Length: 80
Image 1 (cartoon, rainbow, N blue to C red):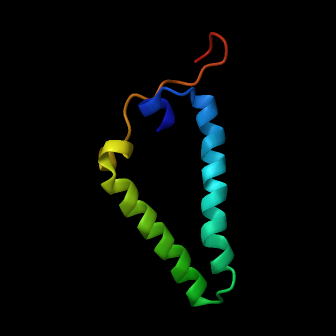
Image 2: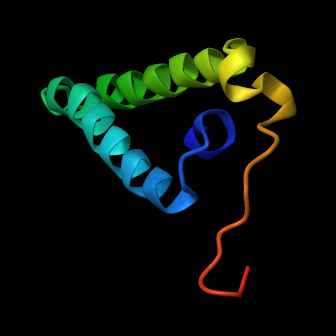
């Protein structure tokens, strides 16, 4: 999304994605680790459902179900 919408290099987008993934893992992981059995599975599936609906509904940012267009290719030197 950073490369397509805000014209940031795709390589920087990888590190932003790693950071965002880590933060979201902490947000869901710390409370969910106190759960056991079926409750842990339900918390994980519930978080997945919320994120899926959120990505589908934010059409202006994520492209919704159609996907994101305009992502530049990764390149190293002359190799794309």
